[in-house]
Length: 145
Image 1 (spheres, rainbow, N blue to C red):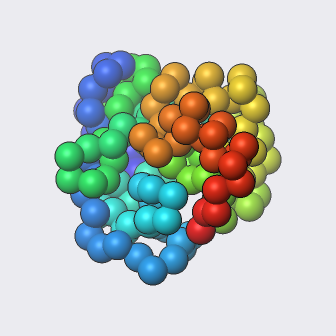
Image 2: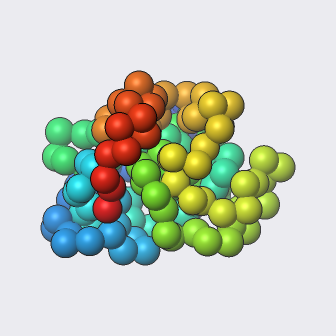
Image 3: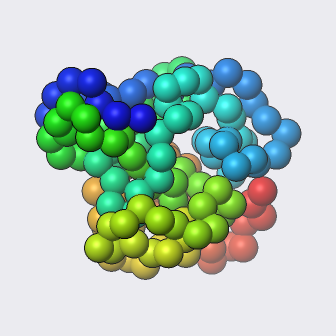
């Protein structure tokens, strides 16, 4: 998916609204809670992963995610986000080919990110994955789906 117009840092590029709650994670689902995965509407579900994304996610009132421009985006630029910013354990990108200089080789999920990688998300992560909540989950061995 590619930008059709200019976006400046901070703009909402996409607003993803849930179509359905899913019984389990899929390659295309979005995790919105420890035990909750949803299918988002198009075009949000069409945005690809990048280890160096140009959008970040923010929970929205509809129960999905808004994709916020992390930097200016010119027309013709692919819209991408880091799947680890919503997924505790990701199954969608077992072999990454984003081409970024900081490519991790796979998007394995938030739990596998280093503190530097978490900082690189600039706070644009699913609410349930706020760093303090995620650290507590690891410490308590919170079951995740």
